[in-house]
Structures are given as C-alpha cells and as structure tokens.
Length: 408
Image (tube, rainbow, N blue to C red; front, side):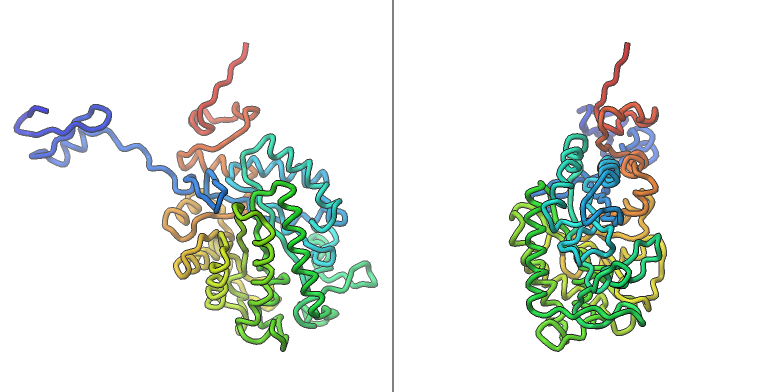
C-alpha cells in the first residue's frame, strides 16, 4: 500500500484508502467522503409465511358502509384500486362479514354469498393488473354490535321494527344500556358461525386473496367472547380466561385449516377494553401465546370498542406500546396501528423494534399516496405504475426506481 508521512493505508471498497495509524480524527473526517444514508427500516422487506412484502406499511381495513347486501360496487372499485397504489406493501380489505346478520350495518361488505364473491372478483382483477401490493382481507362478525346505522347516520342500533335485525352475542347483554339485548348464541349458532368463517376463507382463496386477518377486536363478536364485560356465559365458553378464549381460538383454528398453508393468517385484537375489570394487556398476552401455538403469523394490536364506558387517552401512536409489549412477551410479528400519521414516526416504530409493521387508516384516506411521500422523505424507493412516473419530484429521481420517460 505504501506510506505517506508515517501513515499506513488500507484500501477500501471503491478504491479509497484509509489511514490506519497516526492520523488525527479531523484528518480522517476531512478525507473520507460522507456516508450514504442508511436504508430505511420502514422500507425493508418482510416475509409473512410465504408472502414477501417490499415494505412494512399496511393500509388498515376501513369500513366503507357502502355495500348492498354485502356486495362490493363502484365505490369499492375506486377506493380499493386507489389505495392499492398508495405505496403500501399490503392493502387490507375492510371488515368483511362472514354472514348477513354479522354485518355492523346494512351497508357493510360481506363474503357470505356467491354474489358477494362475484362482486369482488373484477375489483381484485384490476388491482392485480395495476398494483404490486399484496391484498389481505379481514374476516369479521359484529355480534351484538350488528344492525347499526352508518356512522354518518348516528351509528346506533337499528330496531327490527325500523328495518334492522336481532343481533346475536355471547350473552344477552346489550352494548348500551336501554338497547334491546342481543340473543345469546346456542351451540348450533356457534357451529354456524365457525362454518361461516370457514366458507368465507375458502371464498377468499378462490378470489386469490394473499392473506387473511381474523377480526378479534373493537368490541365485535370474537372480542365479545374474550371480554368479561360482554361474556357472562356459564358454559365452556364463559367464566375463566381459558373458557373465554375458547371460541375465538376455535374460529382461528378453523380459518387457518381452511386457508392454504403457505398463505399467512393473522389476527387483530383489542389489547385492552380501557374499562376497569375488562379485558387487559395481561390477558391479551396469554391470548397471543395461545395463538402462537396455533401458527398465527402476526398480531395487529389495537384496543377498545367493547363498552361505551371506555376512556381512551388518545395521542400520536397511543397503541404502539401494546404492539411492543406483545412482541417482547411472545416473539410474534406485530403490527402497530392508531394515530400513526408521519413518516419519521412510522420509521422510528419499526427501526426501534417496537413493532414489525405499521398500519394506517385515516392517514391513508387523507393522503392516498402516503407511501410515496414517506419513501421520498426517508430516501427509499417505492413502486408506482408508469402512468404516474411523471409525478416524481425533480429532487427524487430514484423514488420510483429505474424509470425512463421520453416524448417526441
């Protein structure tokens, strides 16, 4: 290598040479070129079972309340295709009811009929043609929170006399005081619901869906079984924690068995009810450990929804500590969700190991190209269809990878 002024030099990649003896720190800092930016943690790939994702961003499932007897329509075509081009690695279709009486509202999406399945088919075909995002679906049952008005119509129970239906739940306890109580499930009803989840999972596979998320959060049916606030049963599905977990675990097992082994199945849960004496983080971790034994591929850590008495301390990333606690206690892949709106906020969550992925809902509705903008801010690369390549900022020539665009 030779010497200069008594210094020894070591050749580095790219032909540069580094002084290894007798050089001052200031000399080295002046001589060595600045480091290139480190790769964004948010935009590193992740694998969920057999599904490889290019980044750690998920478009969270968001109810649109715009279906007719569970059928997707032109609204869903626009909504899903738009957010499938957000730059997120995966788009999750909204909470999709496995039976008609399991819809939150009469306008909620379903996957309980041949017509429901047929309505989603052209939408998914369009997504596959234009987007590289994986497509997930969240399978759900509203339980005692079914037969509700849409949020923009107040969101309250629709009585049977006004066109609603009688909801069913773990126990005959209404969600709110003064409401008509739901009908408590009997054994035949529980068997019917399990089979409905299985049938929906098989429909999802026929549609070419890449992954399934089982909805066990937000006060809907599976969460209702978990929480002592809504579950007062005295049979094998009520009382102890093991009993309250039994039906949700049976549903998960049934879905996992019905969906191809190489495709991932995860679960969204409420980490706490935010009500004294309700479901809490300690019980959540036990539930997550049971799901781990059954091969769950991720836990999507949300909270609340089972009681109007909840007191939620809202703030940026307020649910991230739940994802972190579950990850540390179980070793499972976790997704953080809830008031995650900024690129560097999401980057810190993933880079620090608090969660493996982030899911955005309202932030994506407000900014349908959130993933593009996050990639630009973090110095990463993201997919965009060629029709949109001209939108690449002049300061971000590598944002969409290697692109060419010529005219004459």
